[in-house]
Image (cartoon, rainbow, N blue to C red; front, side, top):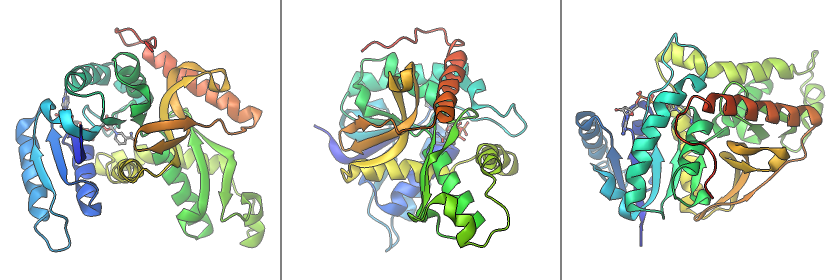
Length: 323
Ligand code: NAD
């Protein structure tokens, strides 16, 4: 039996604390536990955020540092442990493969001692490698392991297109798919704005030039490194992404979002985790969709799979699926 309102966050730095603070702002939990090897930081962060819950506009959420035993009755576990790319480093999340798979090993070995019921949201990069690693190497229900995947890039697509046409980003529909990383791609064949047709927007907005899709895509993929170089990390956008998943699970939404999980033959791809649109409820992933992509987009999906598989060669532990 788990406590529906209890969420455990592993990793209490830029990303973990941003997720914590958004959970508190949105009232998405009744108890949040922070775990980090840096116990001092963990305690400081949980104390600081707990004080915010005394405000009249806040929910009375119990926030505290804890240990893996807290996973026993948690409904969700958010993994944010492990370093990010630092300003000036090679702009490719895949360079984190070796370091962060070791961390996934230590984190997952602990989690499986206490639960197989909680939904696990993987946030740590390289996202698709980490999602594959925790799904393939531990005896845990696959449908309960979700990588945040390209939802963040999909938010960026919405924002950048909305800024271009000067409209509400929530009117932009469609997906960035594949790797949460440099080989991810905009599936333009899925993109629409307000059901008016992306291809008609230049005419509706009296634009002299056609939308430059290549430039938009480049901006989406580059902007993460701009943010890291400007502020030292990315945390606010991903915290909103995590909360979008938490809300979908908490409210049993049956919603469809792009997320990372192990592919089992979609577009002929196996044994690698990538983002596809999937349906989510309070039990985890219940259905994966293979949108009718163009041949060029399918080619990009296959290239994404190759790129992530190549990075996984750096991992010593077995990477073949166990279930
Ligand atoms: P950070 O380096 O500031 O913090 C990492 C934290 O993990 C530290 O507090 C560290 O003590 C902790 N940690 C390390 N090993 C641990 C272990 N074995 N058990 C528990 N805690 C451990 O990194 P950050 O900026 O907070 O980013 C965290 C992760 O999130 C990175 O991998 C980053 O790339 C990723 N990220 C993902 C997305 C996404 O879209 N999925 C977006 C932004 C960042």
